[in-house]
Image 1 (cartoon, rainbow, N blue to C red):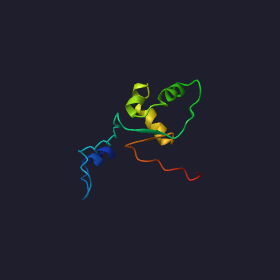
Image 2: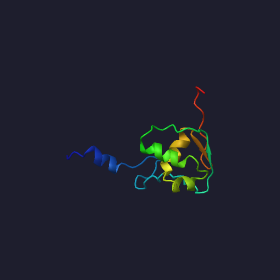
Image 3: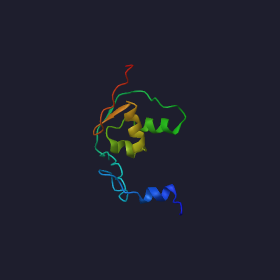
Image 4: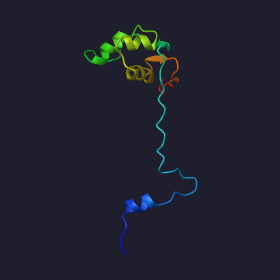
Length: 104
């Protein structure tokens, strides 16, 4: 009698009741898109980035911006804006508020 590999046995196994169909891939998580006219509220007036680094210059360029579109035109990326929001440097209209740390 020929032995079957574990991989073959798993591939040939039938899913139990209520199991997802293994042939159907899980849907990709939906990415939230920020509108260019989403308002930015600045919570910090200083630049918290390390001087001499690229992110310091990008932060300085977007500090006066009042919308996401202005910040993108100033050279920032969506990642920069989300990072600032997650670290509570800014609030962005359309993104859920970030809870304050327990130490504050």
